[in-house]
Image 1 (cartoon, helix red, strand yellow):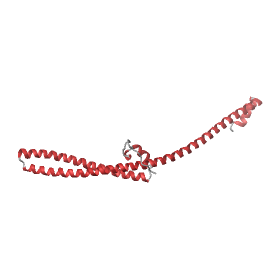
Image 2 (image 1 turned 90 degrees about the vertical axis):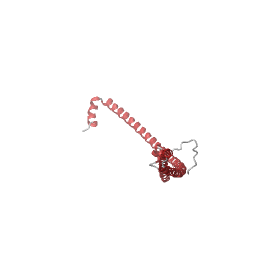
Image 3 (image 1 turned 45 degrees about the vertical axis):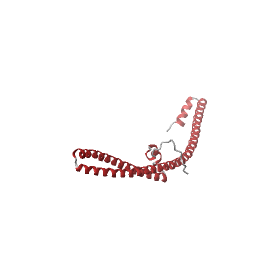
Image 4 (image 1 turned 90 degrees about the horizontal axis):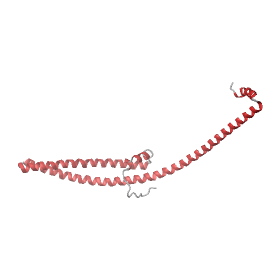
Length: 196
């Protein structure tokens, strides 16, 4: 039973990048958590790839713009026709880069929304799973506490029995010793209590 969670004002980091989440749920994850986690990882890889492409395009565009400035100076100051041709090529390259950037940024925005939705779904599934696990753990803790109480009572009973036996042994020995005397008790100690 998953619920819509109110996460307003909460940090929205990716669960698959959260060390505590990975520690708690990576090994004990159910099928749904594994499925959405893998889906999210794939989307993050795709996002990183798009971001790299965008960075590369921006870097190339900047170089092209710097080249236009250089070619513009050559064309204006020296009347260099080849520089004019190169400026046109650079302008076309910049226009192409702009179209690619616009397309990639659209893909990036779409992917970021999908990542956020998938991360939210993974969070909802994880919270549902966590509460089921917490309930099981509470039951196991209750059983463990009952077993500990049982063992503690047994230990207390055993300790009491030991003290009672020690006291009875001591009293009995004192009685024999006081009734028979130390000489006779020493002889009987050798006969009954010392190992052969």
